[in-house]
Length: 88
Length: 108
Image 1 (cartoon, rainbow over the protein chains, first blue to last red):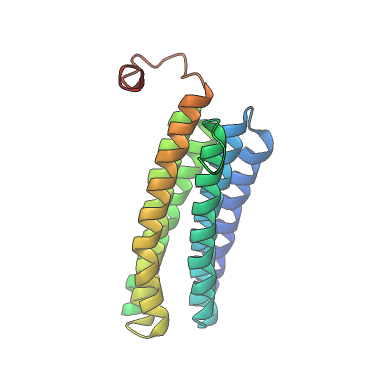
Image 2: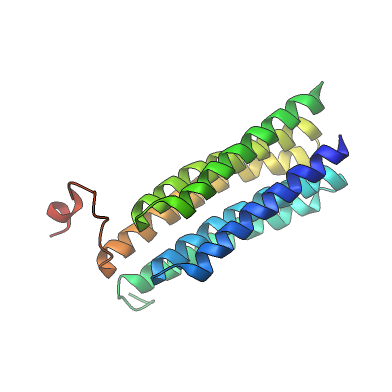
């Protein structure tokens, strides 16, 4: 059963590498931001599978903090795209 | 028994993540890419967290997974909405095969 969890973890890490391909290759700025947004969600899945594997619960805290930081980063970049200053 | 249900949920979530990542690579347009990726990846990661909840039961780790699910739903959907609005104002063109643009009448 732990062997199967290893396979699932490697598949999830490979999917996040696909998002890195979009970040490197993307033709315009919003394509790269889409890649960063999706990468932040996939990392939460990696954290959840590692928490199942090791049985420790603090790894899920890292996932929750990563969601919130990724949300703030996405909102900031979206506001930069609309052309406003950050204090408007 | 709980472990088998949990592994089924995690496998289904990873299949949804795989569909979302194929969408990121293959779709022709930025808007369609963001749409496919956000739907599939949010549903997939929520399914993985439900699997974690089944694995641990209502201990501390299970309750943390239960708290992470609504945060993930709200943050990813609101972030994608504001990102797509910013993209429209930045001037990203839609793809060649798209037929109508309803947001143009609303925003002007």
